Image: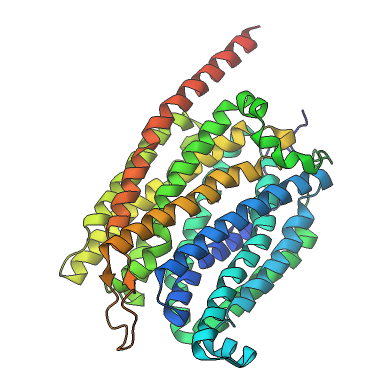
Amino acid sequence: MHTVQTSRFGRQNWWILIIFGLIGQIAWSVENMYFNLFVFETIDSNLEVVTLMVQLSGIAATVTTLIAGTLSDKAGNRRSFIAYGYIIWGVTVALFGFISTENMAALFHTTPDKALTIALVFVVVGDCIMTLFGSTANDAAFNAWVTDNTQERFRGKVEGVLSVLPLVAMLIVAGGFGMLVEGIGYQALFCALGGVITVCGVAGVFTIKDSPSLQRKGTLKDIVYGFKPSVVKKNVPLYLTFAIIGIYGIACQIFMPYMIIYMKTYLHFEVLDYSIVFGLAIALGAVLNVVFGGLTDKVDKAKLLYVAAGVLAFGLAGMYFSHFDNKIVTMVVFGLFGFVMITGYILVAALSGALVRDYTPEDNAGKLQGVRMIFSVLLPMLIGPMIGNAINKAANIPLVNAGADAMTTQYIPAPGIFLAGAIVALLLFAVIPVLVKYRAKKEENNEIENEL
């Protein structure tokens, strides 16, 4: 077994982690939240399309990470996959803003109805292409790079920072991007974001260094490495943690793709309204988790998952009931329970992420990134939106002020998506005890080995 790079993470690695982690999470947040809103508002107010985008993107992300993670192991190189992946990722994000029914009609010289169909095809395919490069750079290579350069004794601290970055990204995207859309429009916004991602990739060419312990290993056959029964049997705690991540992910994907649309259409929040509510909830949740982040290295991470899962479920249940006739009351109560939900959301992510890195064999970090993606992306993004949209469709709450010629099939997100998320989150209590048992057994074995 190889040693990791140093006994500490190091200042330069912290900068790389924060910059590339944050820019990557901003890109993912825009894709997961604002691409959905972009399609809903500018192309077709159809939640079926939003659901399909999320599902196909999940498939693309998982397949890409399986292949790219194995290739980064085989090449013994994370740096090139991260840097050049970010460069191309940024270009694809910028191009997405040019997709519109009008542009498709002009480009293909066709009727508005056919242009709409072409535009929808382009947004779905374009989303998958962006995901291909994003997953190569971020999900496969960047995640493996973090594992390469961390040790178990300070991994919880690193993971705590990583888990806050998606929330900081959500804060920036949900608040600031809404105002930017109103000011400069989607096209300029996507071009600007794409430029930032590309510049980040160019900087990575000169700043990112791979761990000295990273070596070329494996072949393309290693794509199936993580699915071998022998590997699963040898790493039971790792796969139990994957199961926890899968359940948590499904709970979140039931409501997350529709949340901004829900706030705008069902709760009738203006951009400033949901920016304040969402922003304060995320900011407070992030601060609270940074405070508790250091504790994850001092207490049993698996046992702390009980608290995290309970907080997440409680927050989601509260959000289900947070809609009143008075908008100010709705903003306050929804924001309060949103803060509770966000706190649980980050804490579960931080704890499970740290546990995954604890249990991931150092020599096979790249091979297992694809397996992680199946539980963290594929299953949640296939199953979660399916449940969420089924609830939305069953509720059939009509889109208000959709115009005289609006299709009768148009509907908006319903409060039930939060209750369903809470119920699925409670399923974590069926898996956590098994993980706690295995973790206790591992510690007992370690104590025996130390005594010997």
